[in-house]
Image 1: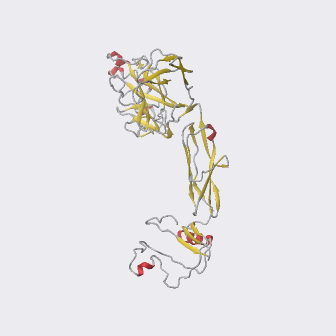
Image 2: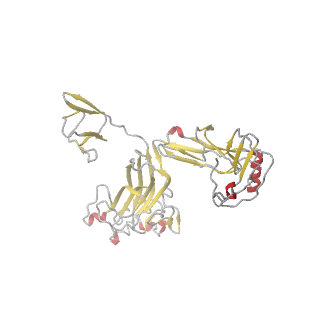
Image 3: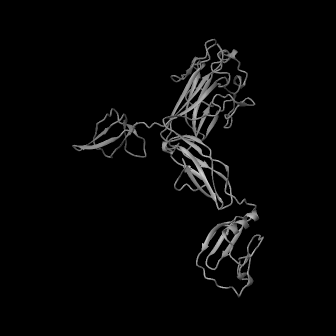
Length: 437
């Protein structure tokens, strides 16, 4: 009839019968009622508390395995309010409307992400919840936690909770939900490595590696190490071991089809690194629940001097008295269905596995980490099929490459030279076709 009793915790129970209706209360709340119950006097057995009649005959196993206290019996049915008063007196529960102790927090997300609002309450039970947006009730939003999935621009607004009990109700402070479309900033904490604790850059030292930050790079890199002064400002990241550092964006997750762009300023000392023969590299990456999904690396000119083949556009020239090679590196990644809902992470440094021999990254500095998300949806190619003279004619209306396969579980391959429209002669076994955008 009512909820299960919680072990190792006192529970207040009350039962009433007014000659017609039987009611059960748990912790002051009415949890069940049997209407229209006929009264049958019990004049053949004693009143038992914590046991049943069968225990007297030693044929049952219904003894209460617990403690019972503060038993009271009335010659009338208590009202709902009297039951609440009993419960409040026993458990020191306030007899008042709910008190909001934790208000929902505002949040800014991109279209397609999920939003969660929560409210903390101190109240006499039972407690009711009704979430509102811009002062209007949200149908079905009657739990303590409000979850909004697959946000759209229309979901933006001011969200608050109306919380009630038997003595009234209270409204939480309203929290703003912003839903960004187009190109949106994805805030990275301490992006310029300006803040450091004990020399270590805040928010960047929780996932394997370690990196210094703060004043003069956190490691004494004064302006004298750079021809013409600091290439950015005097706070930046200095890698101190080969392991990567990663910052997971709290509460931010990938959305399928959204394109994410990571930019980082890279540089080194033109008066120190080359004179020590150090080969430098800088790696930047995006992670999905901690797993790398996109990465790229840049290399100092010492790699090329050593005979390595550096990928096009990935060479940073750092020569004595010639500048520190300040470069803004860019990494672009479009999230897949496998990434959807997984936590976005920004990773810097670490082993480079992109075809160039690993070198020291000790003097490879980084600054100004920025991440943006582009929610614009690219045009989708549409393919049509016609049968003409026993042949199949495929046409498509956007740029795309026709692909074919004999087995849907096997690799797809491009159809050489195929342009729209293209004629396909039926084959055995039959081929399947699709467009690769």
